[in-house]
Length: 195
Image (cartoon, rainbow, N blue to C red):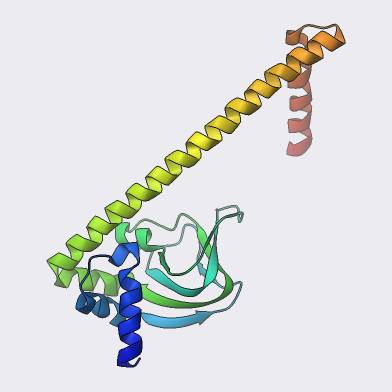
């Protein structure tokens, strides 16, 4: 890679939360340990449950995050890191990551990343501080999503109560009888889907 391209990439990487606050020379050191890869749509970068041996820096394209059942739960666009937490914590992958658009990606092995961190206490401290910030932001986002989901659950509960009361008033039966019939229908559906 030529010096001009390297300089531009260093500036791009310094904007990624994991690398913010690193000097250009330290960022360049991390960049020099990466392998550049092009992946086509459908390529799986990692599988849920597999060991966390690499992290990825998505420069162009896009990836999907799939839960263990294969359901897409998120899409990620450039420029960002992917799978960095597993590399740092050593925990197995919590999700499958699949390329959904032809993507230009830097691959950084755990072994090489750990070596860079071991060589410089300042780099290690900055990266770990950034990890804490990233995890804090993810936690806030998850808390916000949980609050939204709880609001939706509460709204559905209120609608269900109103529907039960309406059915009871129109059907000349009690709310308890309506609930009992609903429970029986749910049991029948559960039995039908488990067969």
